Image 1 (cartoon, helix red, strand yellow):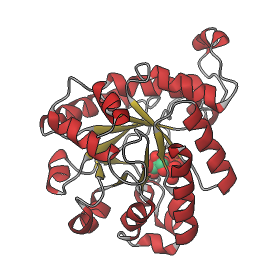
Image 2 (spheres, protein in one colour):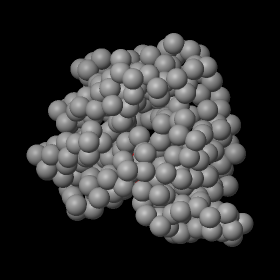
Image 3 (cartoon, protein in one colour):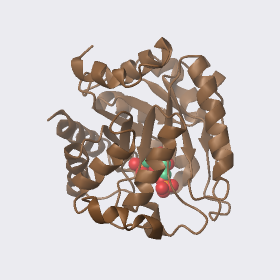
Image 4 (tube, rainbow, N blue to C red):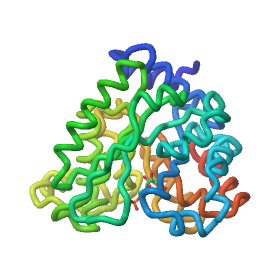
Amino acid sequence: MTEAVEKILSNYAGENPGVIGNLRRIMSTGTLAGTGKMVILPVDQGFEHGPARSFQPNPDGYDPSYHPKLAVESGCNGYAAPLGFIEAVAHEFAGEIPLILKVNNSDSLGDPGQPCSAMTSAVSDAQRLGCSAIGFTIYPGSGFRNDMYAQIRDLIREARAVGIPSIVWAYARGGEMTKEGETAIDVIAYAAQIACQLGAHIVKVKAPSEAVYLPAAKKSYETIPIGTLEERIRHVVQSAFNNKRIVIFSGGAAKDRDSVIEDVKGIHAGGGYGSIVGRNAFQRSHDDGLSLLRDIMAVYAS
Ligand code: FBP
């Protein structure tokens, strides 16, 4: 137990001991244990983007056990994946590193216009597999968003009842939303707020750009500093219950090491709680991915 972790947990005071205990476990694991910061390795891209796009850059990644090993070796706080990948490794890694069961997933084979993930596993699977949290994606912007909100409402209730916290991937997309709009600062802050209002314990969003997408929001942003990544992160964290919910930021498609580290510095400086980095870690060679994850953690530990 550290002051930093207990301070964060005090924001979840209404939760039951199971949920608090699992959040504490995530924040007490790995290199960043006790700092209140976290780095999670998510590997659902095989489902979301397809195997070759995901794993061919580093074919070791086709093997389900490659990823949790990388997560443990690098000192991550957790490893998130869909049912199949978690089932393949839970006997070896449950208790070794917090496992996060991604309970819904979408593929890239259907209509991207109105995305809506399928329920691919259940809270009972998370219990059976010894997971410390469930993960769920919502797509604010999609015509199916209200169905997703209803699903996550019920799931959070069910998971909470058995002491499992929920991590919500809040990715605005679909409908009229443009590519630029998906990462616009107002949209990211809005998505984070929606996830918190739905009861997410941890929120995951993409790093925001300086664009403001919604015409109705433009006036408000005249007085909000959003010129630097640090300022934008500060605003997103403020939008997540004034810093009282853990918000972590996703890594995005693989890019050069310096850009990844630059982003992480901005997230850290703006008060973000950490990163959830998939492709930038597992699409590199083992040694390169490992050292990048360690460098990311060094920024958060600084
Ligand atoms: P990455 O670091 O690879 O971006 O992973 C984070 C993540 O949220 C994954 O969990 C998910 O598969 C992916 O991003 C979604 O990416 P996209 O925006 O391309 O659908």
